[in-house]
Image (cartoon, rainbow, N blue to C red; front, side, top):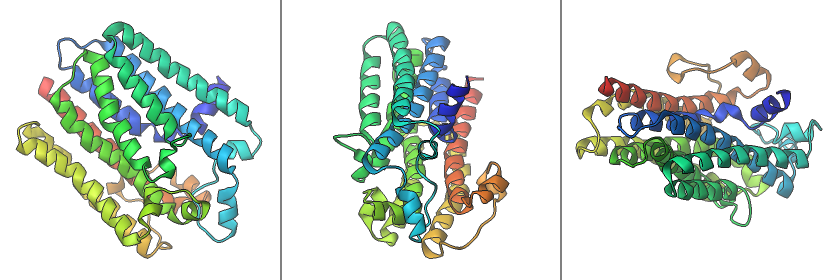
Length: 331
């Protein structure tokens, strides 16, 4: 059990809301169909969790094999403010690369096992969802494509955690697809991509020095970086507005715009990071849950988490509002 907890923690389980909430949302939406079945829904959510943890560990595995994990420490000594040492559980000697690969494969096996069980319920279409998710997940940082090193990481994440994840879970839960899921999954994917992209902006300097071609590095100009960030946020809310205006979504979905002030606040924090990176901010109520801030400050990560956590919370509140809307309409 301690081994399982060790790998779950080091698989960046704090990022699980990025996949868990869209998956739960898809299940809630599917529960409105007569063909809904609770067990495939639960198994699908568990498969999503295992797949997400697998993808995070594979990201560490491929990065370590290609560059080693010490480069962020080297950059910090050169004066770059780096988010955190990459793979500290490897560099500290707690475990090795072979054990990491085994953990990747173990989580992957759980995800594939969940997919196989759902296949028994729902048939061959499930295999296409699982296959595409596996290919994109491994190719995010693994060869030969290494998409996150070609400025395509945000695109991959947006597709995987938005339309692909929600459509796959929805189909697993009820055996069909619906246009409402399509309307909702796109803004959800954009908000997940926003988390990764905000992260990339904050890691712009060390990523550029390390030769990692993220979208932020590809854009080069900080003005363009902020413009793309604004575009992601506007596109997410624009999709919701478009869905409501065309009748694809109920007017109840206007409640998702309650999260718009959080998006504005996040954009302001990112603008301030680009213009005045040393400026300090403290947690505010509008940011949502901010974790153990004292511990975050001890690790000198407040400059990063003051932006990453609101980006994550924006997605979380957005999904929770739609979950409440879905259950309220059902009631």
